[in-house]
Amino acid sequence: MQINVTTDYAIRIILYLAIQNKVTISKDIAMAMGPTRYVFKITNKLLPAGIIQRILGAKGCFILGKRIKEIYMYEIFKVIEATVKINRYLKGDNYCKCFEIKNCSLRKFYCRLQSSLERC
Image (cartoon, rainbow, N blue to C red):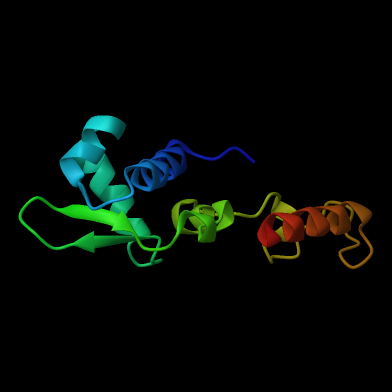
């Protein structure tokens, strides 16, 4: 699995807010991370998940919605990525090249790997 650029920026924004450890103006985030429009696109995805909070004001400010130790990578992946399944075997459409869905050892391996990712 390779995370997309948007997810990478989301992680960086979260880390930036954690380092700042205070209410941070969106302009400052954009100067550190990239174009303002891109930062707003990402922050708008993180808001409903409670990962960050918007502080109302003229300049548009943000702060972490949780302590950094309570934010898990998988949580960020679920918010930003189109899918967080590591392989097509796990998408729920019973896809299996060996046509042994219940007994496929490769599928079982991917299930264990996916479970491990989701627990971390």
